[in-house]
Structure formats: C-alpha cells, structure tokens
Length: 174
Image (cartoon, rainbow, N blue to C red; front, top):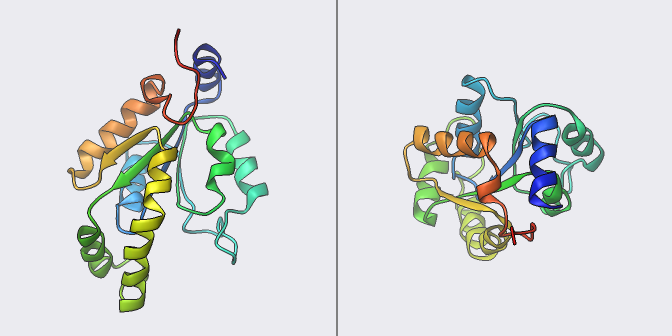
C-alpha cells in the first residue's frame, strides 16, 4: 500500500496500532492509560481473544480490525503477523529481562510470571521471540520510560502514523 493510500485509509477508518512485547513490558498498563484518555483499546490477553492453542481467534480479530474508528490493540501471539498489514503501526515495548521479571513478580492483575518456571519462559521468550517482534515492528519504545511518555508517543502515532511506517515493508517515498 502506498503512503498516500495508507494515510487516506487511516483517516477514513481511524488509525490502528498494535502494541506488542514480552510479559512485563507494560502493555496492559499502557492500554489502561490510553482508555482513560478516551481511546478505544482491546487487550487481547483478556475476554477470549486468545484461543487455547495460544493464537488469536482469527475471525474475531478480523471483525475487530474491519470496524471503523481509531483502535489500539495489545497482544503477543504466534499468529499476530497475519494481521500486521491491517495496522498502520506496530509498536514493540521493550525493557531488560530483569526489569520484566521484577514487574511480573509485583503485578497483581495477572498470575503469570510468579513461578520460577514462568520466569524461565520469560527469559527464553525474551531471547528468542523478542528479536522476531523487533524485526516486524515499526517503532520500539523503551518501556522503562515513564508511562505518560510512552502513552504520549503512542498518541502521536495515532495522530500521524506515517513517520513510523517503513521498517516492515511499507512503500517508502521516492
């Protein structure tokens, strides 16, 4: 899709942003703050978006992404790449693995990460999966930054997704 048609599509239906990253990067916290600021958000970790095999419910996600209006979705699942062309921007939240472990131990809204087994998986996923997410993202944000700064950066992308495009194969201006 050319940058001009991408911009026209985003204006017509509202920009779509995917926030992805490892457990503990703050995806749910960022979405909660965006929601408080009036943005439409979907955290796919909750409400049945993820099937028992750990992938997104493709029919449900397809319907969601076909809806009108601005939308910020968060999640990290094996089949998210099938939907990347339906997002104007893919944002990777990242932080050092020790920060991630500390955060998942302290959080109260999700039991994942409390056990030694979970923590070993977080370390493994950070080493093996995060580089794949980085390669497919348009923007990487340091999740150690204050939450307001991260949210403001995402709001800027919602207003104007064009500067972020290009890393994952979008046409670049000639």
